[in-house]
Length: 259
Image (tube, rainbow, N blue to C red; front, side, top):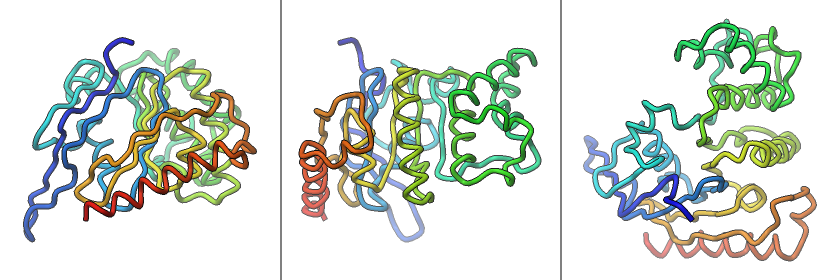
């Protein structure tokens, strides 16, 4: 196997606040290979999103090393190596869905005809063809999140960073979007880093599950999933799935030993 797409070694991040230092990440070491779907799970405030933001060069580590596609995170950001999907869809209400999806392409200076072709392609990928001229307020929450994913896919980066994108959705919609995301990942072969608080979601989606402890965020377990790549929803009722979920739960419990 070649060099990892994302590699962290001894990563630390401490925020300086008026009330004293806050240790967000402590000695985080992790290698993520190209094409993996890696979920990060842990209690609130454990550093899951902070680690994702370090990958995206939105936060600066205070110790250790981190590389993205063999570059520093800042160089990877300038090279547009990743798309980022936030917890909220973050669509501009005055722009149509098509123009929201096209926004990064406009910023990057893509010609108008290429913008249009890319927008059409990614909207088809997330099953939103025909909604180009709708405004965000005319779409359901789940459809807005699909548009947000399409926007992150529009410039065809190899890495997709997803910060709990389905956390605010009801269970039925979440199940549907989990299925769609797995299908999208299988078709594109992208490397996905996915933050979640849901054990079933982490187990269902991932090839690798990273379990983190309460602050300061440490990795307590890295679990390579034995589940097949093709995963219908009813795989969640199988003994293999339940055993994997149990190991994740035990890892979360073990994390409290660090407190």
